[in-house]
Length: 173
Image (cartoon, rainbow, N blue to C red):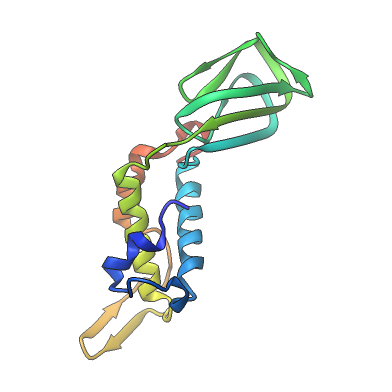
């Protein structure tokens, strides 16, 4: 996951130990990580990934950036040993190809950029604090009233922090 219990604990003023005392928090941590990766159309954590789908053309953009190593490339089950090269965020074939590709590679950040980590922490804190009021348009307590749009979406500041990391080649809007 992009963010862990230890990352949000100080901001939420949670106990030093015992993530199990906050049963909704692990779900929020997972969902925020998935929402951020979906918004950016990329995987952030360094790991081995396999991507496969139909394509036609010479270039296949990848989702786990930056790309560290390519282990295998095949199109329609046939190895493409010498017919490609890596160029930044994509595989580029020498010739026009079409078919179902399968690429096994290692990619992602060894250390998460601070902007991405901050975005995840902000979003988790926001969702955790709203977890009892999802769908509410306003919440009143002794400290006052807070108005919400009713939608639970990525915060504007989170979207701003993530902007440099969107993968436009994969549809990162």
